[in-house]
Length: 601
Image (cartoon, one colour):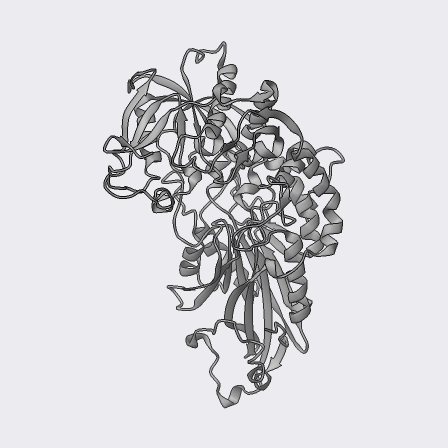
């Protein structure tokens, strides 16, 4: 299907362009300009806005954890090198001067490539390298990008250095200085599109990020930055943009469309607020949606105040899709106005890598491949996460054992040294495997895919019981006489795997035949029924410690120690020191699933 459309058309010419517009969703009838005789000389302009989101460090279609080209069952491809090819095609078809390229955040965290240039060969070092994501996005020619929450994972120094290396603005209208309440990043970006013989079309892009940053990266932002809600900040900024003459208002929002939150009531804002922004704030034409990692080719939301339709689109994460917004404008009575907006996504598996991106970053890629293939130990048997979400798996026990050992050593000689140390961990991946034989950094990195750090919190037995009950809500209630389908046993209510926790050092059953809130049975410590008053130290990742997932008690619990070294690094250090990875050194039988007291497996 041809993408090409003339940019500046009389009304009669538009009528003849129907074939080229085939496939684009029709604009609501209420928004179409009336076809009256006195408007036959009305001039039009067609603008295309392209968007990516949640790139998470994917430059190439490469899986660093498998040391091979990326493949999945759906045939998807990943990487900015593919996106670059798609962008070039759209620019050629639509006219580069009639396009805008945006991103909706989560750029500098997510792969060993981004970790390497944050920690191993950091961009913050004197004379340090230019971040590969900055190099790629500059070369592709992005116009603006919104801040994502993962931009803050490596601290403000890394983020600010990345910002300096970009040739386009990093937007965050609701990332404000904690003292002055003024924007700490550029709030918006305006671009003018020339139209022969008529005033330029002014397009304003407002960047919004996620309020959850205040929780998830509290260690880096507390007392420095605050993150008000998306709706209130959009309501503040959009009228300003219109008063500055914006003909089109596009929001790039690192926030999903579902209206849900994963942080409970710890922050008085909605995490996934993009559709709420569309509903509540007038004069927005399109929203590039991010954060949720779902594909939304086109979502139409009616603004409750004006009755106008706002079009939302979210391209699939990791550069697997490119969103296209086609915006038609009409010039009448001395001004431009938006006549219609439609959206769709393009699949990056339909094109090859752009050779200019391959050439630009082949050296950086090769360095990271060499780094992740370093051998750090030997495994006596294969360890896998394939069943870890419903069976107590030794590979997750490795995480909890490392965390216990690190915290015990850190607390030695302190007033908390006598408290028992427990540890929390989640089955992040369903495909991670540490094969028997040589163990590499990439094997261990695939086990712990996030850049979380370690925190020690003091919690009571009663609080830990509530913590486990909350975690057990992850399982779908399954009657004792019903066959168990493991594919339908987990993720109740859409809860992701990373919000299900093991807790080491305790023994307990999870009775999935019981309703949520009444599932933890036979909870013991040291062979005795757990004393609700007893105090423990819980070794927990910083995401959970700060309230991520809204687990009870942990965010408000007393913090007695924390560090900035990633848990992934601690695992590699532990394995390197041991030399041999043997389950007898870390595996423990802590929990099992039951139904009315009978083990499920």
